[in-house]
Length: 154
Image (cartoon, rainbow, N blue to C red; front, side, top):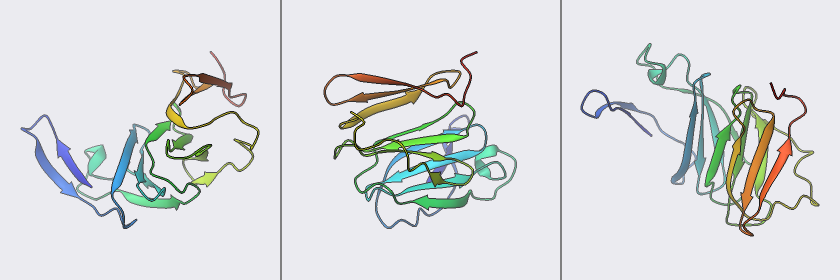
């Protein structure tokens, strides 16, 4: 993974290895200090970036928190909750390839989605600006909207 500073003529600030062994397919950064990096193998690696080159404070590289191996197909969608507490990850290569994880511990929530959730193949996903809702667009042209009760709407 290469880190570029676009304000200074696209200068490369450094790089760090994504040790999954396959090509990276998706990346998402959150200002709270976390980065998620998805791979073609279905692995999502979570990095802590607050004391790294991405924060602009030091020249240190991001530190890997953990790799999440709950999905089996190429990761094409990643999204962080506005608070930085959750990360959503999905693949459109197979049905029901969607998981939510706690960003700080990289613990995947095993109770959702269930086998009965009508997720299908995920093409896009995102959280509402205040984090009270989670939207999932699928291959049937539908957008599923879920209320996250742990987060307020205001």
